[in-house]
Image 1 (cartoon, rainbow, N blue to C red):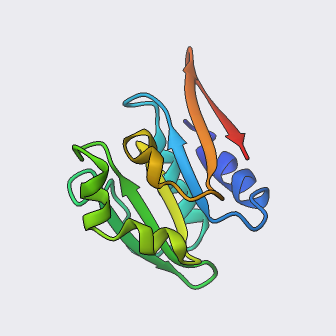
Image 2 (image 1 turned 180 degrees about the vertical axis):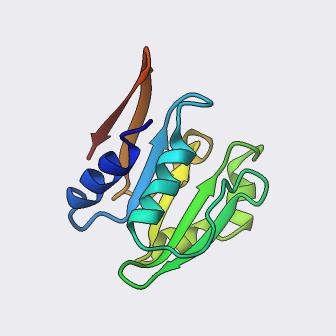
Length: 130
């Protein structure tokens, strides 16, 4: 993961108008690490952390505006996600990085870009599926 800053920079350079990203990958593959680096590259000045216990963290960037980071690992069903207002957030024009999107598959926005992170030996592979 030593090349994470470069990977994050390249990712941001290639996203175009996309603002909703579903990050798929097994536990410990580096989804949160990648999102934290993306936020650094996006100019978020607050300390970023995994929203595993809070489910959602909200950040602000002068260059990118409001950024939401979701971690749905701990939710039991989609109703929990609805209770925290994900539909309204997804309908907005803010950036959203969504970990464990398979837990809320039916709620994901149509314009969501799938990002799959896998491990091959000591390397991480980041695939983007539009």
